[in-house]
Image 1 (spheres, rainbow, N blue to C red):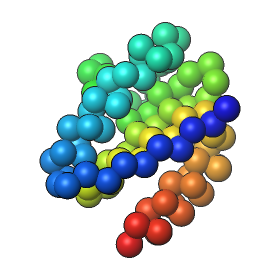
Image 2 (spheres, helix red, strand yellow; image 1 turned 180 degrees about the vertical axis):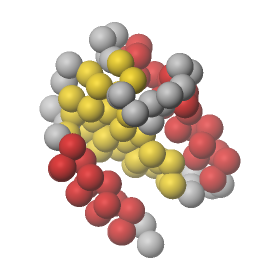
Image 3 (cartoon, helix red, strand yellow; image 1 turned 45 degrees about the vertical axis):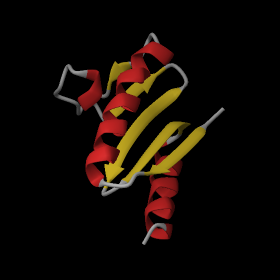
Image 4 (cartoon, rainbow, N blue to C red; image 1 turned 120 degrees about the vertical axis):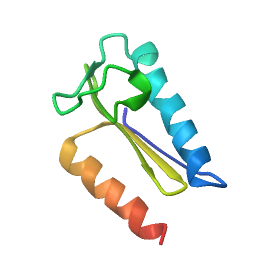
Length: 89
């Protein structure tokens, strides 16, 4: 199963706070989750990309929008994220 979750917040600051919270839940929901190779932080709330047994989990904060994508292949995730961000303009 793949998941696309978007949420709009009143301010970019609120979106960043929720994005940090959502990121921090990834290791609890996916006990085997590991930060993707490109990640340098060890703080789960700062990690944007995770590798899990069911696929990649990504969380992006763009302005006051949070976009979380779970278990899509990378190409599909990129297309879905681009479509969401284009529709938000």
